[in-house]
Image 1 (cartoon, rainbow, N blue to C red):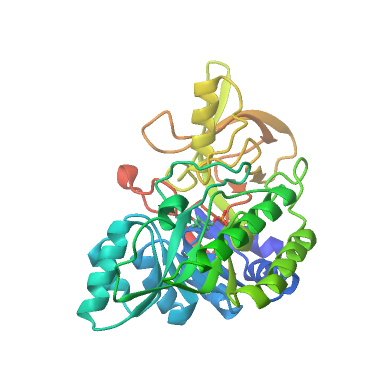
Image 2: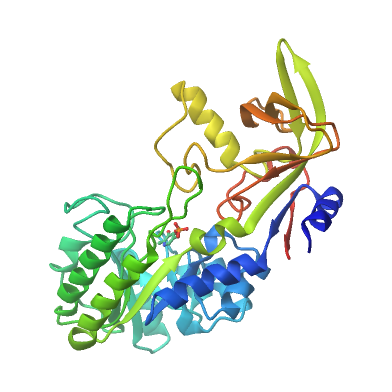
Length: 393
Ligand SMILES: *Cc1c(COP(=O)(O)O)cnc(C)c1O
């Protein structure tokens, strides 16, 4: 579709998300070309729209499923059992049963190991599983931290393995998302490989895969941020993989949500009212908080602090320049506006004091960087409005 046709299309369909297949394909290919011998997994929670998952599957990428329903979505998209890694805290027996024989399970706690043992025993099988470890390092230091995710590194090396129906074949680590510092990521990969070597010496472990988790960030603010240097990162991974060939012979996995889909998506919503209140100009749009919650989150932090928040709170708030707003309309003059949504709460504020092209009722507001953690994260059902539509073009 040409840009002009997209404008016509969104006038008919907004509020809507449009994801561009070509951009997703390119992002998949970029990672796969740079990183030889590494398998990538798509973190479905970033964007679970089925045509998006299918696009990624067609590029030969498997999934990082964060719920039993995401395991089922992966299967529906045509992925194979051995490409689907189910890792999340708090899996219940019901979840495990639902996902049984459809994925590789990553145990997140001792309780989960007990549940998996029971399930495997009932099926009369020896089940190969991975464990998520809460490592004695973070992205920025080499200390133990408390976490709701995984099993503490020290405990992994000190407890007795009594599971007769489980075989430990993999390690999963993930400590932080949206890292743009190449050195931090390189060090993190090295630390994770060292942990895997230590892990492989456990008498009950026969390590077949190392899942390095995610971390590769994307520059949301192209003026002030640089993307990760993938060449340097790929070189680190290549060196580790060469070592691994002699030492462990394990498969290397990296997860990614946002890198694959973030900039493929744009959000469009119609301006349905315009008002002037005691010196301020307001645009009222459909589905702000109940369609693009990242905007209202940013405004809430700004109000609480009195200035724009510097720290990110992934995935709800990515930084002060997490997206750009633009008016699709006829005017060329500019004005300063607040953009509010149609919900009955003052928190439903998409942006404040921003300069945009002067808008008329009926024009369309366009929001960039909307491919990851936007629709799926929003507070969709408040006030029972219709939901934005989604399209892959
Ligand atoms: C959310 C999540 C990811 C994806 O993170 P991105 O920053 O979108 O790449 C990967 N792994 C785990 C375990 C996650 O929870």
